[in-house]
Image: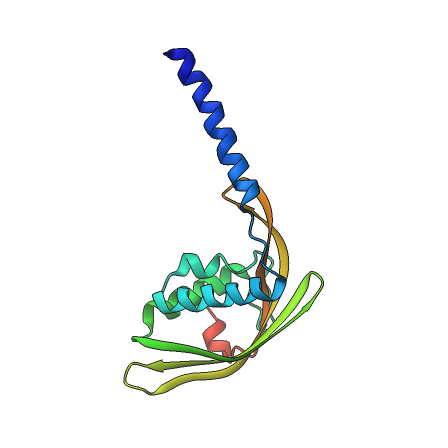
Length: 159
């Protein structure tokens, strides 16, 4: 019985590792980036800070002086403080250039009553990074490394 348990554990680990390597996602770059944008929109709508921040690279920086940690704090504050809202994304264009990509889109936030409180054409800069699929298999992932035209003032950025 003890011998059987000792043989089953490595077999299960081997099967898990094989599944991890065999199921690495193989979407093309544009589809992968579009998937990141869709996941980001869902995270914003659900107010899921962890899911949203997981899409942002640790190397994030922008012209407002935000880095990954400051952006996380800003997002957390806004997700917590803003009244119920709806999000829509339109006019999405994605250009891929090797390990970098740029996604432009129109982003509109409306309060549930219908008033628009944010309407901007945003640009997100992506980089292909190495992530882990099922915690084991190395897999390419696209993450946001910068953004343009967030429309924040110095007061918004001062945390």
